[in-house]
Image 1: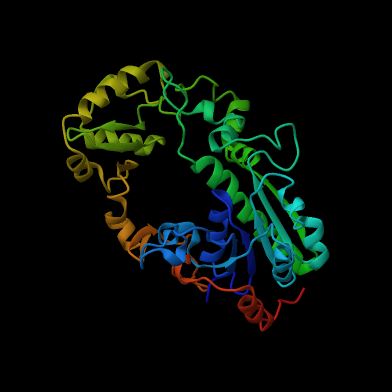
Image 2: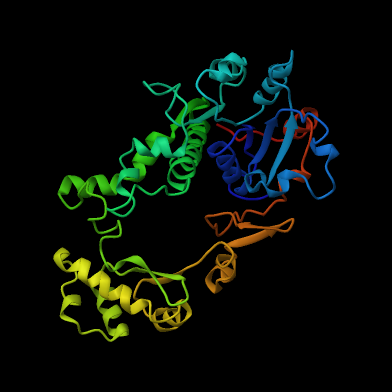
Length: 378
């Protein structure tokens, strides 16, 4: 095992969304991540499935991890997890507030067993506040950040940004950052702590630049009227003759000027780039122009010409793009194409590990391996 987090021992309480994604990020960087999962039940449990049909094969978030089955509600179940906690560096959980406490695995119990433990919690609304115990999903959490309302065309409803902005960006990545910070601090102080990562908080933080622009008077709350929300004709997507799309993002004048040269455009409407009064007509003219050629033709004309251009690829096409191929942006594990670990490191280069489907283990085996490792000095 290699990577900048080699030697870091992580317990992940299996859930959905941001918790497993955070665990994958840590595993990608070399951490030894142990998933605590309920034992399979019924005739369709993993042992009963045909070879190669284990659902974990397709669970990209499980890659690089090992799985331990524990019935947390059975007598002795939580005690077995606490045995792991005693040797772990990090615990990740994404249950609603109070669930881990009811199981006897809350921060108080875990830190009593291991005072150096970093206890990472990720929820939609956080551990306290009026909504803390309310049900919700990604779209609800980003709705209160002020950012969902800024996305989409002015004549349409706000557009859901998949679950990228909330669960993965505002939740999982903020938790991973918090864990890295807490691990560094623990090596100095010898003390662990609890991380309260709320998706509602994290997604709001991702909008820091936009809130700054709003305070400056450079961003309005009217959707589809700003520089980065599709109002600007030079920061948008356009349909091509073959039904595929291209993207333009030539905000800076030098790139915008280069676009006009490449398009051989001298139309006066195009000359005043930041004149918002011209934007609607400008956009109509660009749309009429781009629909006359295929995406491949526009890529040949505009690609590599410093006009801030890229074709809009689907998930079948993206892994085959020359840039992604050159950087190994996508990898294949057990026949499943998936994004490679990121970011890249010059010295502690992470290895890509197999999917979690092939890595079931026992608590005894984990404890034996962990006991042989030397904990970094404080």
